[in-house]
Image 1 (tube, rainbow, N blue to C red):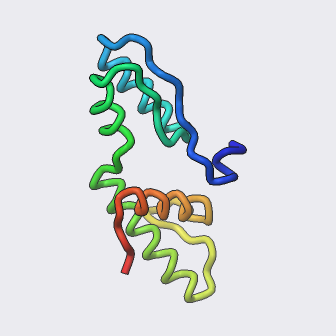
Image 2 (cartoon, rainbow, N blue to C red):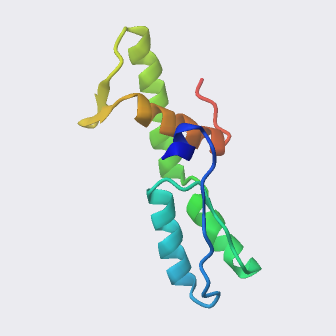
Length: 109
């Protein structure tokens, strides 16, 4: 949490079983879910799985784009917290969306 608050990438430790691709995928997805920004590997065969998990999907990019666009519109109207599809959107959600768009090299126009 301290690293995230300081905008420092947090890398998860290695998954030692180089023959268990599904185990690697599950562990990497969990690491991403709890806030890690990457995962160390011990074998080149693990690269593709880790990249797949940490590369934003098209759906994640669309959602992040919508969040940032709605945030800008609401901010211009003096609204700081709003909802999209019944879910509250506030500063931490917007920051996560902006980070994801930077990873995907997407600019909100």
